[in-house]
Image (cartoon, rainbow, N blue to C red; front, side, top):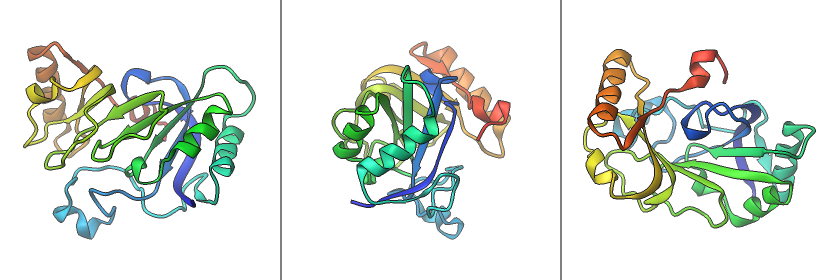
Length: 210
């Protein structure tokens, strides 16, 4: 299998329960809810994405012909040290490409493997951390994991219904949009009204990390 990677770089995880952790960030190209092209945004299932996942031209991106080759690329970016190795795999939608061979190859290099997915495809076996971020209008099949991250507000999603899903942590993140203040107020209100939810912010944008 050839893996198409938009970008891959060493940074600090900026979102969720692992925010602030040193990690290699591996972004796969492609998504099943939007082409990534602006002319298609209005007709997409996910219209608010703020990520460029088209092509393989980003920092550390490219085509990788084997799981071992891609895992080796991730290890090179991590550098020295065997302790607390973390790779965060995202997209686009990572489950379009992520497979057990790559998970195994990363584990063999002592990485914990975390994934951020829209949940419309089942998670591959062997992952160490599963974060699902549901999108309104999509059919979520991955309803269990470590972290549910709800970008808010989204018309068509009922947070009370999501609370029935089998996650250890329920996070609400303000939507990055033109109405940022209103989105923050809405996210705070949800966390105040329903204590199962915890407010999370995109810390990497606050401090200026990619």
